[in-house]
Length: 100
Image (cartoon, rainbow, N blue to C red; front, top):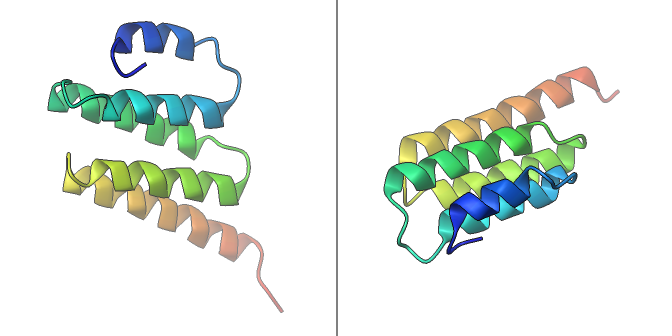
């Protein structure tokens, strides 16, 4: 995927597993350093969107954390926004399941 992002995106649409789609998008974004920054941002934004749609909270938070970590060297503001999204999901989940 890293060498030919367009082909990777084509294949990505055929993947059923959201987890695999997130991992594939992250790998394409990491590439070999030859992608323009904006393309890398776009791929990581797409990975964050896919991660946020995961079913399990634990899995969702883990993937968002990984994507945010990938974003740090590219765009610190987007990385912070992704970490914030993960925090808000965790907070919402905690409030929905109070512990007595």
